[in-house]
Length: 224
Image (cartoon, rainbow, N blue to C red; front, side, top):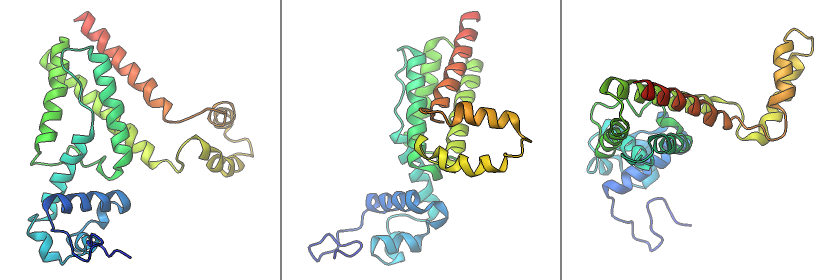
């Protein structure tokens, strides 16, 4: 059986900054940020904690790098193309990335030392909005509105007690028993006539809300 940090040949592969950060990313994805410490990371990599410090100075440096790695996974819009399609593509990509890295939802905009992928991401989104004709003020409004929606939806999605449409019924049935007395008729109606219907997927609500936001931004651009 191959030991942690062992490449299978009996020799431990050389520890690099990339290996440390990839190990940190895997640890955060599997167990959350609370589980990510220098000690736990060293244990996962099969090295002593002091060895990790040769590659990264602190946990804060690791978090800065992890945020940059997450931003690098999000598909960038292309300035000058159809701004609605480009920003829609970027929003859907961001949601998928945040579903993979749920620990990052509240962390993306928190770092005071943003990395190159982070800065390039923000610069490109701004460039896309400006190329579409939005004023600096409307660019700020649009960017904040879109990201508030994307991050908020990702947070709500991550908090749901079920994953995917196939598990909705497992959660809804015991809740329905609590509503059997008839005190919540509107909730019962929505659950039976919509949420529990075949094909319902909470993820579909993302596109509906995003389209409303883009419709409103497009209308403001036309009026302006």
